[in-house]
Every structure is written in structure tokens, then in C-alpha cells.
Length: 381
Length: 164
Image (tube, rainbow over all chains, first blue to last red; front, side, top):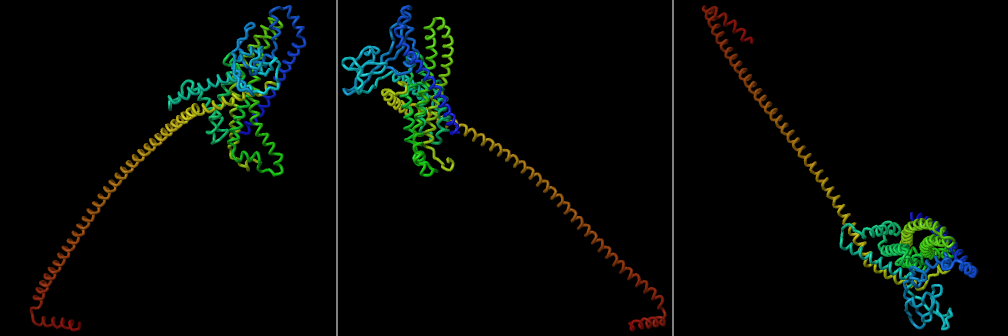
């Protein structure tokens, strides 16, 4: 059964990776084309723009690849809307640790990359050190620990998550021994699902120890996925679609797996049983790669899925403006299709939000299961 | 490729945040939630088990009642049978006794009849003997009136006696 599941998931992983690969390459090409276009033919567009007057400024800005990448990537201020030429953003704290200590200031000091502050400035959304004359200093050594858009969004979602769970916990202690009410009812479905469908069958009798961790990653990923689907301020950040976030989650799973790995788990990696010792030279590296592969797969799957979802939806919206730039009527016509597709994609993403949280949790549980499982070599080989 | 390069700051904050969230949720959310769920499940299980036990006890009780009833019925049957037997016994005993008594009476009567008959027979015999002797005396007297005749007769008889 477990083996079967793993097989299905390995197929799913391949499919997901393929899909995300294609969407990435497509967008990369798109972005590059647009980039080249705007660089090489800047003068041309400028002359064309002159005919259209004020409106054409918008036309130049329709660069779907850049727009999408900006939305997907992390940022030092939280962009909400652009009205005319005014960017409505929430400035976020910048925290920089360098040789002279820790510097903390608001990202509004950078004026969206137009100004340098305390020896740093924003270039393409990234903090770079600048020399006194304003040129970029690539040798400077510093750590950027700023509260970025993703960090802030994660804080908000974590606060919401804790608030939900604490209120549910208190409602349980209030309704001791009674049926759950309201929110607790909803959460209990998830809790029981993780406990009975994920932890118990994947880990076996020792599932109790891992249940808090599994519940935490499930609800953490799920709520961040959902927040990512909210298009305006408290949501909209691509938290679970950021590789740093999924990296840390996967590392947690890897560390928990490694700490709890029993003798037979490590034995299977470093002393594969039932194999001639001469083959260990070959098998041990493969086993080690397999062990490291697990968290990497976890990391990439969640990142690619969520990012791909965001890219697709943003892509549909960008279509409206790309066609709108060609002609207003075309843009209106396409908008109907785009909105319809985006609505459809939103529903699909709701499913993906749950599915990816579930898959991450399930695979973590399977890894824990393999770490604490008592192997029976006769059966295994 | 900016997208697949994990940012240091994000890794840093994520590690801290996630550790805190994991700790807080484990301690203040999952523990009470899972405990209450388990307690509730236990209490439901206990209640179900108790109901099952009660049902079993009930059926056991019912079976017991049935058994008692059957036993009582069997007892009654047995008692009736015994009474019947006793009655039959008594009647047959009584009959037997009566028969025996009657037999005895009959036997007694028969015996007394027999003895009476015997007595009567004996008496009759004696009587007949006396009468015959008397008659014989009378006949003899008549016949032995003369002396010679007497002597002849005695002699004749004597002869037969001595020969004997």
C-alpha cells in the first residue's frame, strides 16, 4: 500500500515538475523577449508612444514576465495598488547585519529603489551595498535579514493560525467531552484526517510522537497556501511558493526524520543488508542520495506547485493587458475569457492548496514511518 | 534564476517563526485538542462498551429468567409426575393389600371351611362308626343269641387273627 502510494506520488512529482518546467521556460522566454524588446527598441516604442500621448505609458509597462516575476518574488515593500503614478505600498522594516552592527529602518527610506540609505539601496528589489559615490559595491559583506513581504505575510498567517488553533483548543477545554462546535468542528476534520489517514497508516504505532509536527506543517502550509490566494493586502504573497520557505519546511522534516531514525533506518543506508559487501561502495552513495533526495523533492514540489498556480493566474490576467494594449476591444473580449479561466484556476488552486499541504504532510509522515519502522529483512529483499 | 535562490533573511525568519509556531501549537493547541479528542473518543467507546455490556447483561438476565422458568416448569412437571406415581403407587399398594387381605380371608375361610368339613366328616365318621357298631351290636346280639353260634363265630375269627 505504502509502496503504491509512493509510486503514484513519484509520477505526480514528475508531472508537476514537467508542468512547472514548461511554464517557467515559457515565462522566461516571454520575459526575455519583452526585455530585449524594450531594450532594443526603446527608441521605437518611444516614437510610437508619442502618437498616443499619456495612455501609452501604460502600454510600455505591459511586460507580463516581469510583472509576474515581481508578484511571485519576495519584496521589501508590500505593493497594494498603483493609482496613476502613485504606488500604494506598505513599507516593511529593513534589517541588515553587517560589520558595523545591525541596521534597522523602514523600506520607505529607499523610495522604491530611487534612493540610497545608510550605505544600501534597492536594485531590482534586492538590497545592495553602495559606495559613497552611489555605485554598487559588490564586495561588501552583509546579511539581509529584513522583514520582507513573505516574512510579513507569514507572520500574519501564523498569527491567524495560532489564533484559530488557540481558540479551538479553548473551545475544547470548555466543551469537555461534548461534540465540537463551530470552528472546532472544522478544525477537527483536519486534525482527525491527519491523524487517521496520514499519521496512523504511514507511521504505524509510534505516530503519537510525530502528530504535533505533522499537524503543524499541514495547517501551516494550508493556511499560507490559502493566504496566497487572497489577491489583496493581507494575502497575495507567494509564501509557500518561495523556495526558502519550502527549504526550511523540508529541512525540518529531514531533521526530524534523521533524529528519529532508528538502527535499521541508518543500517539500511550505510550497511545495506542482504547485499555483498563489495556492492556497498555502489549502494551506500545511492542510499545517501536517496535520503537527501527526499527533502529536496518535498521542497521543490511545494514550491513549484504553488508558484505555478500563481504564475498561471497572473498569466491569465496579464493576457487582458497585453491584448488591451493592442486594442481596447480585444482586451475587453479577452477579459471575459481570462476572468472565466482565472475563476476556474482559483477553484483548482483551492484544491491544490489543500492537496499540496496534504502531500507534504503525507510524505513527511512516510519518511518518519520509514525512520521508525522495524525492518524485516527477509520480507524486504 | 532569482526564483530558486533561497533568500537568507527568509530562511532565517522562517526557521525562527516555524520553530516558535511548532512549539506554541504543540504545547497549547495540539496537546489539548488531541487530548480532548482522545478523551471524547474514549468516553464514547466506554459508553458504547457499557451499552454493549448492559445489553449482554440484559440478555443474560433474560436467558436466566428463561432458564428459571424452564426449571420451574420442569419442577412442576416432575412434581406432578411424582404425585401421579405416588397416587398410582398408593392405589396399587392399597389394591394389593386389599387383595392380599381378601386372599387371606378367603384362605382363612377356606381353611375353616375345610376344617369344619373335616370335623363334620370326622364326626360323621364317628357317628357312622358308632351307628355301625351299634347296628352291628344289635345285629350281632340278634345273631348270637345261641351259644354255639357264638362259639363258632369266635373261633372262626380267632383263627383268622392268629394267622394274621
